[in-house]
Length: 343
Figure (cartoon, one colour):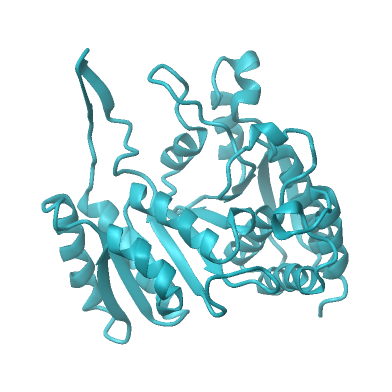
């Protein structure tokens, strides 16, 4: 069978985005050569860095470029606060391509401090609605309203995604909700969850309130496998889960839709470190690993993960957050250098 030709859009983003993307591409370049992958990079822009030129942080030209590609590898972009500021470029891309599943793995890594030694869980976050639906407005000078939208369609497809993922893992899915207070919206989500669970009799299904799960993550994170939840809750608990296994610098994510995907680290743009070549690129590199999984290149994905683990085990080339003094680019080069030695 002839190898597929892939077009991958590359968005460097803001702040430390260019640094982590360059480090990740140095790894992907080696992977492309080793495994003879036909992957073309298509550079485009999003974030505050393109506002002066386009008057927006997500230009229509960028969306048109993305439409001509198979997926996007994206660095972090800054989302300013304030009622009149630009909306999130991330949310814009997710909604435009209906990237409904935000998948965030959290696994204990070699030589990286973790609350427990055997954590391996994945947060599956509904990515298109909830409190991030954009229905946030001022009624008058004294009152604001933010609407939390939960639909049956979104609940059903994210729950099915979680169960299908659990089939390949430890066969356990936990719904995180707040049904004791949000009785109607989360009540529907919970009912849908347990209805779909009946279709997967070999998978353990349970649920927990979002406030309770934050303490159980600390006490027994090894208990969990696949966590499925709505947008805001998923945003919050995925950062906690990342810190449990060593910090958000190692956190990767995939935003998955039916016909498109976006891969990015979970950390922010950290403007104070712009251009300093300082931050940890592992989250972005592991996002490339998730991209290889999505493309069906299992050997390439395993090589990236194996190289990351080897560098962490050796502990000689680490960024400041992991107790080292190496630069972002140096970690990228070190991981890239290990790729060739992994069979």
